[in-house]
Image (tube, rainbow over all chains, first blue to last red; front, side, top):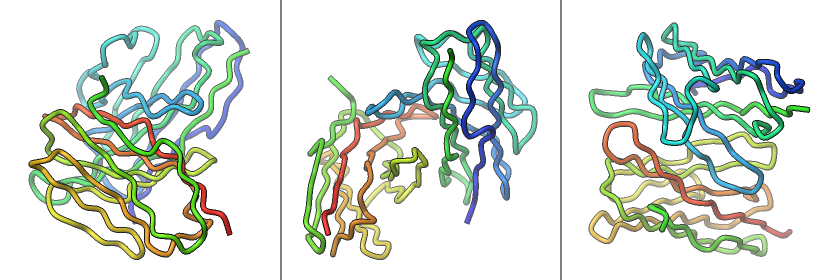
Length: 118
Length: 108
């Protein structure tokens, strides 16, 4: 079946540094990818919608200058957490939409990236 | 009030029991997803529904569009079914709303 990968699976960084997380659709082209954040024992929170070749659409309350999203190809979207702070520590998950037929799709999730900012 | 409400929040069952998880939503939707998240965090999309009923193995998902309600059923539950089950709806374009999840523990 379709697979979405994320890299890295976990990362520890120091406050003030930037971290890049990659999301790849391995065997299909995804014009639309999503980035989510999940706090412990909570459900997913949609951060932004990433569209290939255009600017990402951010949800209300998500700082676009802090969470930079680049969807440069049909199989890769990246999330860069800039000037990371301890409160950015979280589990970041991406998903990709695989079109099936017009107006239909399947959504596949990546395995997630656990970010710890010290 | 959340756009998507799930019940129960936590569920413990004996192996072999029939399990039902419910999801109600308050927005118009184009599709409803049932997701499974294991303790490691990885998420699997179990079903995508826009009407009726779907079955995959021991899992059955139903949706009633008029009542804005969906259920996920697990027959003959097994300890490996232990996970968090999340209901998510897609409402107009790429707007997604997520339930808070149901944590299921199946005891041998």
